[in-house]
Amino acid sequence: MKILSWNVNGIRAALKKGFADFVTEQQPDVLCLQETKAQPDQVELDLPGYAAHWHSAEKKGYSGVLILTREEPRQVLRGLGDLREDPEGRCIVAEYDDLFVAGVYTPNAQRDLARLPFRMEWDADFLRYMQQLERQKPVVFCGDLNVAHTENDLARPKQNKGAKGFTAEERGAFDAMLQAGFIDTFREFTEGNGHYTWWSNWGGARGKNVGWRVDYVMISGVLRPRLESASILADVMGSDHCPVGIELH
Image (cartoon, rainbow, N blue to C red; front, side, top):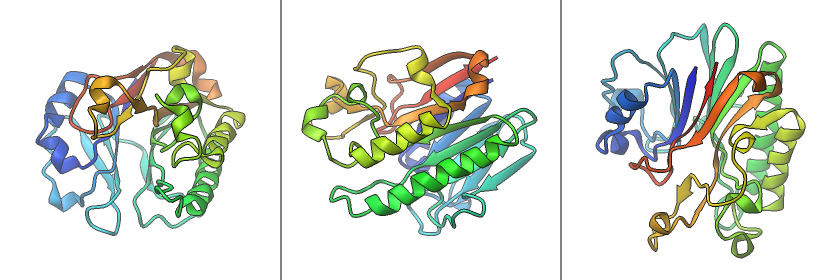
């Protein structure tokens, strides 16, 4: 089972930059997209063999998540269940026979950290929701978590200490996911720095690989024996983020 995740920074823009070719080439079983910035009626998705399940933000042109699936899920869940209303379109879950796949776009704390309190509440509620699902069957959750977990997950940790995406609070919330038994799949195969998923559009950051690893695929611990690979597709263009993915046997 091939699961990919990508913050496309606007699905309409991505479609003009080869998104359909990417899907055809990669042939994922499940593709979770974040920051779609669109309502379903604003987009023509011509992707034979895939069904599209949307959870758009109420505010047009903002946030939004989407799951593309080859096999029709048993059900699709939007938001964080009974834990939180989700008018910003930040979480969508597809249920399959043997697992859940969740796509998530975690709120950004903002440059002045004005949204950090909201972000921390979201992180706690999201983790509780994943744990609720996990009581039924194993969980894969993936997406833009808007945090670099360790100093190895961004090119310039000293300069960014305490900045949005690298505060002690946000990093601690990621620690809580690991303590709850979820696995950062990429780190099961790859150590060290230099492996990033987001780059600023300024200063030639991507060409210089001055980036951050903020996009993840996390799995329940019981799925570890099924984990064959985890990858960052840094060569795929079309967004300021690149796709990430795993393969489960």
